[in-house]
Image 1: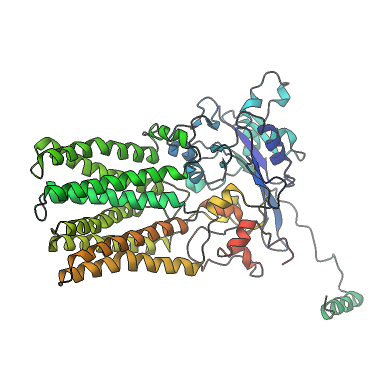
Image 2 (image 1 turned 180 degrees about the vertical axis):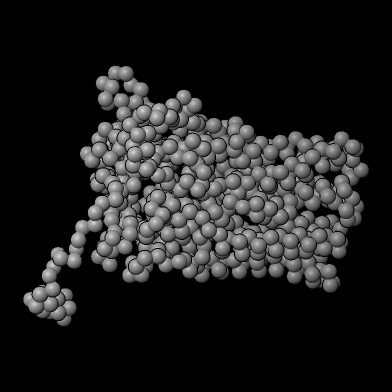
Length: 231
Length: 349
Protein backbone atom coordinates (compact mmCIF):
# COMPACT_ATOMS: atom_id res chain seq x y z
CA UNK A 1 0.00 0.00 0.00
CA UNK A 2 1.10 3.54 -0.73
CA UNK A 3 -1.29 5.86 1.07
CA UNK A 4 -1.39 9.56 0.29
CA UNK A 5 -3.44 12.53 -0.76
CA UNK A 6 -4.54 14.05 -4.04
CA UNK A 7 -5.10 17.80 -3.85
CA UNK A 8 -7.04 19.57 -6.57
CA UNK A 9 -5.57 23.01 -7.23
CA UNK A 10 -8.52 23.71 -9.54
CA UNK A 11 -11.21 23.51 -6.88
CA UNK A 12 -9.27 24.50 -3.74
CA UNK A 13 -10.62 27.85 -2.59
CA UNK A 14 -7.86 28.47 -0.03
CA UNK A 15 -10.17 28.59 3.01
CA UNK A 16 -7.68 26.90 5.41
CA UNK A 17 -10.43 24.59 6.73
CA UNK A 18 -8.14 21.58 6.13
CA UNK A 19 -5.36 23.20 8.14
CA UNK A 20 -7.72 24.00 11.01
CA UNK A 21 -9.37 20.56 10.96
CA UNK A 22 -5.89 19.00 10.99
CA UNK A 23 -4.86 21.10 13.97
CA UNK A 24 -8.10 20.27 15.82
CA UNK A 25 -7.84 16.51 15.27
CA UNK A 26 -4.10 16.09 15.78
CA UNK A 27 -3.64 18.32 18.79
CA UNK A 28 -5.37 15.58 20.78
CA UNK A 29 -4.04 12.80 18.53
CA UNK A 30 -1.08 10.43 18.88
CA UNK A 31 1.56 13.11 18.27
CA UNK A 32 -0.30 15.97 19.99
CA UNK A 33 -0.34 18.51 21.32
CA UNK A 34 0.34 20.93 18.48
CA UNK A 35 1.66 23.61 20.79
CA UNK A 36 0.68 27.24 20.29
CA UNK A 37 3.10 29.99 21.22
CA UNK A 38 1.64 33.31 22.43
CA UNK A 39 -1.88 32.30 21.26
CA UNK A 40 -3.37 35.54 22.56
CA UNK A 41 -0.30 37.71 21.97
CA UNK A 42 0.59 40.10 19.17
CA UNK A 43 2.24 37.51 16.95
CA UNK A 44 0.59 34.14 17.64
CA UNK A 45 2.52 31.19 16.21
CA UNK A 46 2.62 27.46 16.68
CA UNK A 47 2.97 23.98 15.24
CA UNK A 48 0.87 23.07 12.20
CA UNK A 49 0.97 19.89 10.10
CA UNK A 50 -0.79 21.48 7.17
CA UNK A 51 -0.27 24.95 5.76
CA UNK A 52 -2.04 26.65 2.85
CA UNK A 53 -0.15 29.13 0.70
CA UNK A 54 -1.51 31.37 -2.03
CA UNK A 55 0.12 32.21 -5.33
CA UNK A 56 -0.55 34.22 -8.46
CA UNK A 57 0.21 32.17 -11.55
CA UNK A 58 0.61 33.83 -14.94
CA UNK A 59 0.57 37.49 -15.95
CA UNK A 60 -2.46 39.76 -16.14
CA UNK A 61 -4.86 39.34 -17.84
CA UNK A 62 -4.03 35.63 -18.15
CA UNK A 63 -3.41 35.19 -14.44
CA UNK A 64 -5.02 33.09 -11.77
CA UNK A 65 -4.92 32.69 -8.00
CA UNK A 66 -3.84 29.19 -7.01
CA UNK A 67 -4.04 27.93 -3.44
CA UNK A 68 -1.59 25.19 -2.48
CA UNK A 69 -2.22 23.30 0.76
CA UNK A 70 0.90 21.42 1.83
CA UNK A 71 1.46 18.70 4.37
CA UNK A 72 3.81 15.72 4.50
CA UNK A 73 4.10 14.11 1.05
CA UNK A 74 4.99 10.69 2.59
CA UNK A 75 7.80 10.45 0.01
CA UNK A 76 8.85 7.09 -1.38
CA UNK A 77 12.44 8.27 -1.05
CA UNK A 78 12.10 9.99 2.33
CA UNK A 79 15.46 11.59 3.10
CA UNK A 80 14.07 12.85 6.43
CA UNK A 81 14.03 9.20 7.54
CA UNK A 82 17.51 8.44 6.15
CA UNK A 83 19.20 11.38 7.86
CA UNK A 84 17.57 10.84 11.28
CA UNK A 85 20.41 9.75 13.61
CA UNK A 86 18.20 8.34 16.36
CA UNK A 87 15.77 6.18 14.40
CA UNK A 88 12.88 8.32 15.64
CA UNK A 89 11.78 9.02 12.06
CA UNK A 90 10.52 5.98 10.23
CA UNK A 91 8.50 5.01 7.17
CA UNK A 92 5.99 2.25 7.71
CA UNK A 93 6.62 -0.55 5.19
CA UNK A 94 2.95 -1.62 5.17
CA UNK A 95 1.40 1.67 4.01
CA UNK A 96 4.27 4.12 3.43
CA UNK A 97 3.23 6.57 6.15
CA UNK A 98 6.20 8.55 7.53
CA UNK A 99 6.01 9.02 11.30
CA UNK A 100 8.12 10.32 14.20
CA UNK A 101 8.51 8.29 17.39
CA UNK A 102 8.19 11.07 19.97
CA UNK A 103 9.99 8.98 22.62
CA UNK A 104 13.17 8.64 20.52
CA UNK A 105 13.48 12.10 18.92
CA UNK A 106 16.29 14.30 20.28
CA UNK A 107 15.12 17.47 18.51
CA UNK A 108 18.21 18.09 16.34
CA UNK A 109 16.15 19.52 13.41
CA UNK A 110 18.17 17.51 10.89
CA UNK A 111 15.06 15.89 9.34
CA UNK A 112 13.49 19.32 8.83
CA UNK A 113 16.63 20.37 6.96
CA UNK A 114 16.33 17.31 4.72
CA UNK A 115 12.64 17.94 3.90
CA UNK A 116 12.14 20.13 0.81
CA UNK A 117 8.42 20.61 1.49
CA UNK A 118 8.57 22.17 4.96
CA UNK A 119 6.46 19.34 6.36
CA UNK A 120 8.27 19.01 9.68
CA UNK A 121 8.05 21.48 12.53
CA UNK A 122 9.83 21.37 15.87
CA UNK A 123 7.58 21.72 18.90
CA UNK A 124 9.66 24.01 21.09
CA UNK A 125 7.66 23.13 24.21
CA UNK A 126 8.03 19.36 23.88
CA UNK A 127 11.47 19.53 22.21
CA UNK A 128 10.56 16.98 19.54
CA UNK A 129 9.83 17.06 15.82
CA UNK A 130 6.20 16.77 14.73
CA UNK A 131 4.58 16.16 11.37
CA UNK A 132 1.50 15.01 9.49
CA UNK A 133 0.53 11.44 10.42
CA UNK A 134 -1.97 11.08 7.58
CA UNK A 135 -4.35 10.73 10.57
CA UNK A 136 -2.99 7.23 11.22
CA UNK A 137 -5.04 7.25 14.42
CA UNK A 138 -8.20 7.77 12.39
CA UNK A 139 -7.92 5.92 9.08
CA UNK A 140 -7.57 2.54 10.80
CA UNK A 141 -10.07 3.21 13.62
CA UNK A 142 -12.74 0.53 13.31
CA UNK A 143 -14.89 2.33 15.86
CA UNK A 144 -15.55 4.96 13.21
CA UNK A 145 -18.01 4.39 10.36
CA UNK A 146 -16.08 3.42 7.16
CA UNK A 147 -16.76 6.73 5.39
CA UNK A 148 -15.11 8.60 8.28
CA UNK A 149 -11.91 6.55 8.17
CA UNK A 150 -10.15 9.31 6.25
CA UNK A 151 -7.76 12.09 7.28
CA UNK A 152 -9.47 15.03 9.00
CA UNK A 153 -8.37 17.43 6.25
CA UNK A 154 -10.06 15.32 3.56
CA UNK A 155 -13.36 14.96 5.41
CA UNK A 156 -13.63 18.65 6.23
CA UNK A 157 -12.77 20.13 2.81
CA UNK A 158 -15.89 22.07 1.72
CA UNK A 159 -14.73 22.28 -1.91
CA UNK A 160 -14.05 18.54 -2.10
CA UNK A 161 -10.54 19.35 -3.29
CA UNK A 162 -8.82 16.65 -1.22
CA UNK A 163 -8.84 12.90 -1.78
CA UNK A 164 -7.28 10.11 0.24
CA UNK A 165 -6.39 6.66 -1.02
CA UNK A 166 -3.94 4.00 -2.08
CA UNK A 167 -1.71 5.00 -5.01
CA UNK A 168 -0.59 1.39 -5.52
CA UNK A 169 -4.17 0.43 -6.42
CA UNK A 170 -4.73 1.43 -10.06
CA UNK A 171 -8.48 1.43 -9.56
CA UNK A 172 -8.55 3.69 -6.50
CA UNK A 173 -10.11 7.13 -6.77
CA UNK A 174 -6.72 8.82 -6.25
CA UNK A 175 -5.05 6.78 -9.01
CA UNK A 176 -7.95 7.48 -11.37
CA UNK A 177 -7.82 11.24 -10.66
CA UNK A 178 -4.06 11.37 -11.21
CA UNK A 179 -4.49 9.49 -14.47
CA UNK A 180 -7.41 11.49 -15.82
CA UNK A 181 -6.36 14.96 -14.68
CA UNK A 182 -2.61 14.66 -15.25
CA UNK A 183 -1.46 14.84 -11.63
CA UNK A 184 1.85 16.57 -10.92
CA UNK A 185 4.45 16.39 -8.15
CA UNK A 186 6.30 19.24 -6.47
CA UNK A 187 10.07 19.54 -7.09
CA UNK A 188 10.40 16.14 -8.78
CA UNK A 189 13.99 17.04 -9.72
CA UNK A 190 15.13 16.42 -6.14
CA UNK A 191 14.21 12.76 -6.45
CA UNK A 192 12.22 12.38 -3.23
CA UNK A 193 9.32 10.76 -5.11
CA UNK A 194 6.54 12.43 -3.11
CA UNK A 195 3.34 10.37 -2.94
CA UNK A 196 0.94 13.31 -2.54
CA UNK A 197 -0.05 14.50 -5.99
CA UNK A 198 -1.52 17.82 -7.15
CA UNK A 199 -4.12 18.21 -9.87
CA UNK A 200 -3.41 21.24 -12.08
CA UNK A 201 -6.15 23.80 -12.74
CA UNK A 202 -8.41 22.76 -15.63
CA UNK A 203 -7.87 24.57 -18.90
CA UNK A 204 -10.93 26.75 -19.37
CA UNK A 205 -12.20 29.10 -22.03
CA UNK A 206 -10.72 32.58 -21.42
CA UNK A 207 -13.30 35.03 -20.12
CA UNK A 208 -13.49 37.97 -22.52
CA UNK A 209 -12.63 41.24 -20.85
CA UNK A 210 -12.42 43.66 -23.75
CA UNK A 211 -16.18 44.31 -23.70
CA UNK A 212 -16.43 44.84 -19.96
CA UNK A 213 -16.20 48.59 -20.27
CA UNK A 214 -17.05 50.26 -23.54
CA UNK A 215 -14.85 53.17 -24.47
CA UNK A 216 -17.45 55.94 -24.21
CA UNK A 217 -17.04 59.72 -23.74
CA UNK A 218 -18.36 59.68 -20.15
CA UNK A 219 -15.95 56.97 -19.00
CA UNK A 220 -13.04 58.70 -20.73
CA UNK A 221 -13.82 61.95 -18.86
CA UNK A 222 -14.18 59.98 -15.60
CA UNK A 223 -10.82 58.31 -16.15
CA UNK A 224 -9.19 61.69 -16.81
CA UNK A 225 -10.74 63.22 -13.66
CA UNK A 226 -9.67 60.26 -11.55
CA UNK A 227 -6.13 60.66 -12.81
CA UNK A 228 -6.06 64.38 -12.04
CA UNK A 229 -7.61 64.34 -8.57
CA UNK A 230 -5.11 63.44 -5.87
CA UNK A 231 -6.45 61.00 -3.28
CA UNK B 1 19.85 28.81 7.24
CA UNK B 2 19.77 30.07 10.79
CA UNK B 3 23.34 29.70 12.16
CA UNK B 4 23.16 27.84 15.49
CA UNK B 5 25.91 29.24 17.70
CA UNK B 6 26.49 25.87 19.39
CA UNK B 7 27.04 24.17 16.02
CA UNK B 8 29.54 26.86 14.94
CA UNK B 9 31.50 26.43 18.19
CA UNK B 10 31.36 22.64 17.93
CA UNK B 11 32.59 22.34 14.34
CA UNK B 12 35.33 24.98 14.71
CA UNK B 13 36.70 23.80 18.08
CA UNK B 14 36.53 20.05 17.56
CA UNK B 15 37.70 20.53 13.95
CA UNK B 16 40.82 22.27 15.24
CA UNK B 17 41.24 19.48 17.82
CA UNK B 18 41.10 16.75 15.18
CA UNK B 19 43.47 18.77 12.98
CA UNK B 20 45.92 19.12 15.88
CA UNK B 21 45.80 15.37 16.51
CA UNK B 22 46.43 14.62 12.82
CA UNK B 23 49.48 16.92 12.93
CA UNK B 24 50.71 15.32 16.14
CA UNK B 25 50.46 11.85 14.62
CA UNK B 26 52.15 12.99 11.40
CA UNK B 27 55.07 14.66 13.20
CA UNK B 28 55.52 12.03 15.90
CA UNK B 29 54.67 8.74 14.19
CA UNK B 30 55.62 9.51 10.58
CA UNK B 31 58.78 11.23 11.77
CA UNK B 32 58.20 14.57 10.05
CA UNK B 33 59.94 17.49 11.75
CA UNK B 34 62.10 17.60 14.87
CA UNK B 35 61.97 15.08 17.72
CA UNK B 36 59.53 16.11 20.44
CA UNK B 37 60.06 15.92 24.18
CA UNK B 38 57.79 13.89 26.46
CA UNK B 39 56.17 17.08 27.77
CA UNK B 40 55.51 18.51 24.32
CA UNK B 41 53.89 15.28 23.08
CA UNK B 42 51.61 15.26 26.12
CA UNK B 43 50.76 18.97 25.66
CA UNK B 44 49.68 18.42 22.02
CA UNK B 45 47.68 15.33 22.96
CA UNK B 46 45.91 16.91 25.94
CA UNK B 47 45.14 20.06 23.93
CA UNK B 48 43.65 18.12 21.01
CA UNK B 49 41.56 15.79 23.18
CA UNK B 50 40.44 18.78 25.27
CA UNK B 51 39.31 20.73 22.19
CA UNK B 52 37.52 17.71 20.70
CA UNK B 53 35.70 16.99 23.95
CA UNK B 54 34.77 20.64 24.46
CA UNK B 55 33.40 20.74 20.91
CA UNK B 56 31.34 17.60 21.37
CA UNK B 57 29.84 19.04 24.57
CA UNK B 58 28.89 22.20 22.63
CA UNK B 59 27.34 20.05 19.88
CA UNK B 60 24.55 18.94 22.22
CA UNK B 61 23.69 22.61 22.77
CA UNK B 62 21.27 22.86 19.85
CA UNK B 63 19.31 19.72 20.73
CA UNK B 64 15.78 20.43 21.88
CA UNK B 65 15.59 17.11 23.75
CA UNK B 66 19.06 16.43 25.17
CA UNK B 67 18.08 13.34 27.15
CA UNK B 68 17.78 11.40 23.87
CA UNK B 69 21.22 12.47 22.59
CA UNK B 70 22.61 8.96 23.24
CA UNK B 71 20.23 7.62 20.60
CA UNK B 72 22.18 9.44 17.89
CA UNK B 73 24.45 6.37 17.56
CA UNK B 74 21.54 4.23 16.38
CA UNK B 75 21.33 4.91 12.64
CA UNK B 76 24.90 4.39 11.44
CA UNK B 77 23.62 2.67 8.31
CA UNK B 78 21.87 5.69 6.79
CA UNK B 79 22.63 8.90 8.70
CA UNK B 80 25.84 10.93 8.42
CA UNK B 81 25.02 12.58 11.75
CA UNK B 82 24.97 9.15 13.33
CA UNK B 83 28.20 8.18 11.58
CA UNK B 84 29.89 11.32 12.82
CA UNK B 85 28.83 10.53 16.39
CA UNK B 86 30.07 6.92 16.12
CA UNK B 87 33.45 7.88 14.59
CA UNK B 88 33.92 10.73 17.08
CA UNK B 89 33.46 8.31 19.98
CA UNK B 90 35.43 5.49 18.33
CA UNK B 91 38.37 7.91 18.11
CA UNK B 92 38.72 8.06 21.92
CA UNK B 93 39.90 4.49 22.76
CA UNK B 94 42.55 4.57 20.02
CA UNK B 95 43.72 8.05 20.99
CA UNK B 96 43.67 6.85 24.62
CA UNK B 97 45.93 3.85 23.93
CA UNK B 98 48.32 6.11 22.03
CA UNK B 99 48.23 8.70 24.82
CA UNK B 100 48.87 6.03 27.45
CA UNK B 101 51.86 4.80 25.43
CA UNK B 102 53.30 8.33 25.30
CA UNK B 103 52.61 8.82 29.02
CA UNK B 104 54.38 5.59 30.03
CA UNK B 105 57.06 5.22 27.37
CA UNK B 106 57.81 8.79 26.23
CA UNK B 107 58.53 9.63 22.60
CA UNK B 108 59.90 6.16 21.78
CA UNK B 109 56.58 4.30 22.01
CA UNK B 110 56.06 0.64 21.15
CA UNK B 111 54.36 -0.62 17.98
CA UNK B 112 50.91 -1.13 19.60
CA UNK B 113 50.41 2.46 20.82
CA UNK B 114 51.94 3.72 17.57
CA UNK B 115 49.44 1.70 15.55
CA UNK B 116 46.61 2.97 17.77
CA UNK B 117 47.82 6.53 17.17
CA UNK B 118 47.76 6.05 13.40
CA UNK B 119 44.27 4.55 13.52
CA UNK B 120 43.11 7.48 15.69
CA UNK B 121 44.54 9.94 13.12
CA UNK B 122 42.66 8.17 10.32
CA UNK B 123 39.48 8.22 12.43
CA UNK B 124 40.03 11.96 12.96
CA UNK B 125 40.03 12.50 9.17
CA UNK B 126 36.94 10.27 8.81
CA UNK B 127 35.14 12.22 11.56
CA UNK B 128 35.89 15.52 9.81
CA UNK B 129 34.64 14.00 6.56
CA UNK B 130 31.44 12.82 8.27
CA UNK B 131 30.87 16.30 9.72
CA UNK B 132 31.12 17.73 6.22
CA UNK B 133 28.84 15.05 4.79
CA UNK B 134 26.11 15.95 7.32
CA UNK B 135 25.72 19.12 5.26
CA UNK B 136 27.00 17.81 1.94
CA UNK B 137 24.35 15.09 1.62
CA UNK B 138 21.35 17.47 1.82
CA UNK B 139 19.74 17.83 -1.59
CA UNK B 140 17.52 20.58 -0.18
CA UNK B 141 20.42 23.04 0.14
CA UNK B 142 22.22 23.50 -3.16
CA UNK B 143 25.09 25.47 -1.61
CA UNK B 144 25.97 22.49 0.63
CA UNK B 145 25.24 19.62 -1.75
CA UNK B 146 28.76 19.38 -3.15
CA UNK B 147 31.96 17.40 -2.62
CA UNK B 148 33.59 20.73 -1.75
CA UNK B 149 31.73 20.74 1.59
CA UNK B 150 33.48 17.73 3.22
CA UNK B 151 36.74 18.75 1.49
CA UNK B 152 36.50 22.16 3.15
CA UNK B 153 35.71 20.68 6.57
CA UNK B 154 38.78 18.43 6.41
CA UNK B 155 41.15 21.13 5.13
CA UNK B 156 39.94 23.83 7.54
CA UNK B 157 40.28 21.42 10.48
CA UNK B 158 43.83 20.57 9.45
CA UNK B 159 44.72 24.23 8.77
CA UNK B 160 43.56 25.41 12.22
CA UNK B 161 45.28 22.33 13.68
CA UNK B 162 48.62 23.29 12.12
CA UNK B 163 48.51 26.82 13.57
CA UNK B 164 47.76 25.40 17.05
CA UNK B 165 50.48 22.77 16.59
CA UNK B 166 53.07 25.43 15.73
CA UNK B 167 51.90 27.64 18.62
CA UNK B 168 52.12 24.86 21.24
CA UNK B 169 55.59 23.89 19.92
CA UNK B 170 56.86 27.39 20.75
CA UNK B 171 56.07 26.82 24.45
CA UNK B 172 58.65 24.02 24.43
CA UNK B 173 61.14 26.01 22.33
CA UNK B 174 60.81 23.39 19.62
CA UNK B 175 59.27 25.47 16.82
CA UNK B 176 61.16 25.01 13.57
CA UNK B 177 60.91 26.23 10.00
CA UNK B 178 59.15 22.93 9.34
CA UNK B 179 56.27 23.93 11.66
CA UNK B 180 55.84 27.31 9.98
CA UNK B 181 56.20 25.83 6.50
CA UNK B 182 53.61 23.09 7.05
CA UNK B 183 51.22 25.64 8.55
CA UNK B 184 51.61 27.97 5.57
CA UNK B 185 51.04 25.17 3.06
CA UNK B 186 47.93 23.99 4.93
CA UNK B 187 46.55 27.53 5.25
CA UNK B 188 47.12 28.35 1.57
CA UNK B 189 45.56 25.03 0.45
CA UNK B 190 42.53 25.62 2.69
CA UNK B 191 42.18 29.19 1.40
CA UNK B 192 42.26 28.05 -2.23
CA UNK B 193 39.69 25.34 -1.55
CA UNK B 194 37.43 27.84 0.25
CA UNK B 195 37.80 30.33 -2.59
CA UNK B 196 36.73 27.63 -5.07
CA UNK B 197 33.68 26.97 -2.86
CA UNK B 198 32.68 30.65 -2.77
CA UNK B 199 33.16 30.90 -6.54
CA UNK B 200 31.04 27.78 -7.06
CA UNK B 201 28.11 28.75 -4.82
CA UNK B 202 27.79 32.11 -6.53
CA UNK B 203 26.86 30.25 -9.71
CA UNK B 204 24.77 27.25 -8.69
CA UNK B 205 21.24 26.73 -9.86
CA UNK B 206 18.54 24.53 -8.40
CA UNK B 207 14.80 24.25 -7.88
CA UNK B 208 12.79 27.40 -8.54
CA UNK B 209 9.39 28.64 -7.41
CA UNK B 210 8.12 27.10 -10.66
CA UNK B 211 9.21 23.54 -9.94
CA UNK B 212 8.18 23.98 -6.29
CA UNK B 213 4.61 24.95 -7.21
CA UNK B 214 4.47 22.69 -10.34
CA UNK B 215 3.74 25.64 -12.68
CA UNK B 216 6.73 25.35 -14.97
CA UNK B 217 5.47 27.45 -17.85
CA UNK B 218 4.19 30.55 -16.10
CA UNK B 219 5.30 33.31 -13.80
CA UNK B 220 4.57 32.44 -10.18
CA UNK B 221 4.44 35.00 -7.39
CA UNK B 222 3.60 34.57 -3.75
CA UNK B 223 0.36 36.27 -2.72
CA UNK B 224 0.18 35.13 0.91
CA UNK B 225 2.13 32.68 3.05
CA UNK B 226 -1.00 31.88 5.05
CA UNK B 227 0.38 32.86 8.46
CA UNK B 228 0.56 36.24 10.18
CA UNK B 229 3.62 35.67 12.43
CA UNK B 230 6.85 33.71 11.97
CA UNK B 231 6.82 29.91 12.01
CA UNK B 232 9.41 27.23 12.70
CA UNK B 233 10.15 27.23 8.97
CA UNK B 234 10.74 30.99 8.70
CA UNK B 235 12.86 30.95 11.88
CA UNK B 236 15.01 28.05 10.71
CA UNK B 237 15.31 28.75 6.98
CA UNK B 238 14.43 32.43 6.59
CA UNK B 239 17.74 33.79 7.83
CA UNK B 240 18.67 36.55 5.41
CA UNK B 241 21.66 38.73 6.33
CA UNK B 242 22.36 41.83 4.29
CA UNK B 243 24.62 41.53 1.26
CA UNK B 244 27.23 43.89 2.69
CA UNK B 245 27.30 41.91 5.96
CA UNK B 246 28.07 38.78 3.93
CA UNK B 247 30.79 40.60 2.00
CA UNK B 248 32.39 42.00 5.17
CA UNK B 249 32.38 38.60 6.89
CA UNK B 250 33.84 36.98 3.76
CA UNK B 251 36.62 39.56 3.86
CA UNK B 252 37.18 38.66 7.53
CA UNK B 253 37.33 34.95 6.69
CA UNK B 254 40.19 35.49 4.27
CA UNK B 255 42.03 38.19 6.26
CA UNK B 256 41.80 36.63 9.74
CA UNK B 257 41.50 33.01 8.69
CA UNK B 258 44.23 32.79 6.09
CA UNK B 259 46.15 35.98 5.23
CA UNK B 260 47.07 37.09 8.78
CA UNK B 261 48.25 33.61 9.92
CA UNK B 262 50.32 33.14 6.75
CA UNK B 263 51.92 36.57 7.29
CA UNK B 264 52.68 35.65 10.92
CA UNK B 265 54.42 32.44 9.88
CA UNK B 266 56.25 34.24 7.07
CA UNK B 267 57.59 36.79 9.57
CA UNK B 268 58.63 33.94 11.92
CA UNK B 269 60.59 32.43 9.05
CA UNK B 270 62.29 35.78 8.43
CA UNK B 271 63.38 36.18 12.04
CA UNK B 272 60.44 37.34 14.18
CA UNK B 273 60.07 35.69 17.65
CA UNK B 274 58.42 32.27 17.36
CA UNK B 275 55.94 33.08 20.15
CA UNK B 276 53.79 35.16 17.79
CA UNK B 277 52.57 31.84 16.34
CA UNK B 278 49.86 32.12 19.02
CA UNK B 279 48.57 35.19 17.16
CA UNK B 280 48.25 33.03 14.03
CA UNK B 281 46.38 30.32 15.99
CA UNK B 282 43.87 32.74 17.55
CA UNK B 283 43.42 34.64 14.28
CA UNK B 284 42.77 31.49 12.26
CA UNK B 285 40.25 30.19 14.81
CA UNK B 286 38.32 33.49 14.71
CA UNK B 287 38.50 33.55 10.91
CA UNK B 288 37.22 29.97 10.61
CA UNK B 289 34.47 30.81 13.12
CA UNK B 290 33.36 33.55 10.72
CA UNK B 291 33.63 31.05 7.84
CA UNK B 292 31.29 28.68 9.67
CA UNK B 293 28.74 31.46 10.27
CA UNK B 294 28.89 32.33 6.56
CA UNK B 295 28.50 28.66 5.64
CA UNK B 296 25.06 28.74 7.29
CA UNK B 297 24.11 32.31 6.37
CA UNK B 298 24.67 31.72 2.64
CA UNK B 299 22.83 28.38 2.53
CA UNK B 300 19.39 28.79 0.97
CA UNK B 301 16.95 25.98 1.74
CA UNK B 302 14.38 25.19 -0.95
CA UNK B 303 11.47 25.76 1.50
CA UNK B 304 12.15 29.46 0.87
CA UNK B 305 10.57 28.98 -2.57
CA UNK B 306 7.19 28.36 -0.92
CA UNK B 307 7.59 31.62 0.99
CA UNK B 308 8.06 33.68 -2.15
CA UNK B 309 11.74 33.34 -3.17
CA UNK B 310 11.99 32.86 -6.95
CA UNK B 311 15.20 30.83 -6.73
CA UNK B 312 17.58 29.61 -4.03
CA UNK B 313 20.73 30.99 -5.59
CA UNK B 314 23.12 33.44 -3.96
CA UNK B 315 23.26 35.71 -6.96
CA UNK B 316 21.38 38.91 -6.22
CA UNK B 317 21.00 39.61 -9.91
CA UNK B 318 18.17 37.10 -10.28
CA UNK B 319 16.52 36.91 -13.66
CA UNK B 320 13.50 39.18 -13.38
CA UNK B 321 10.35 37.32 -14.30
CA UNK B 322 7.04 38.85 -15.19
CA UNK B 323 6.00 42.32 -14.19
CA UNK B 324 8.66 44.52 -12.74
CA UNK B 325 6.09 46.49 -10.73
CA UNK B 326 5.94 43.74 -8.10
CA UNK B 327 9.72 43.45 -7.84
CA UNK B 328 9.67 43.19 -4.01
CA UNK B 329 8.35 39.62 -4.28
CA UNK B 330 11.49 38.51 -6.07
CA UNK B 331 13.84 40.54 -3.90
CA UNK B 332 15.65 38.02 -1.66
CA UNK B 333 17.32 40.75 0.38
CA UNK B 334 14.05 41.95 1.88
CA UNK B 335 14.27 39.74 4.95
CA UNK B 336 11.62 41.52 6.98
CA UNK B 337 9.00 41.14 4.30
CA UNK B 338 9.82 37.47 3.93
CA UNK B 339 9.70 36.73 7.63
CA UNK B 340 6.50 38.56 8.33
CA UNK B 341 4.82 36.94 5.36
CA UNK B 342 3.86 40.32 3.92
CA UNK B 343 1.74 40.16 0.81
CA UNK B 344 3.21 42.52 -1.73
CA UNK B 345 1.17 41.12 -4.61
CA UNK B 346 -2.11 41.42 -2.78
CA UNK B 347 -1.67 44.72 -0.99
CA UNK B 348 -2.54 46.88 -3.96
CA UNK B 349 0.93 47.47 -5.31
